[in-house]
Length: 72
Image (tube, rainbow, N blue to C red):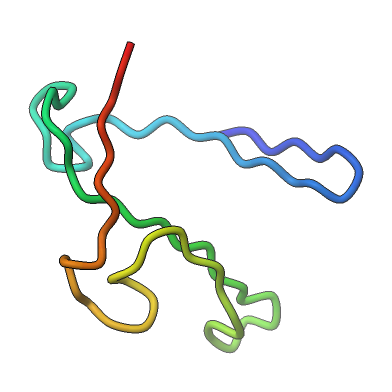
């Protein structure tokens, strides 16, 4: 994982093995994905969050996941 900051923009980059996402290899078909970054700076639980897609932060609903197609 790496974190870089440029001005007011912070970028997080990480590598996740396909197996950790439930795939045995790089998927060739579209799959559903949502990402959540939570704020817990005070250590007392999630104070806020930002979400790309849906189906995770406010409700567990796979129909709200965004389709992702990996390309070369």
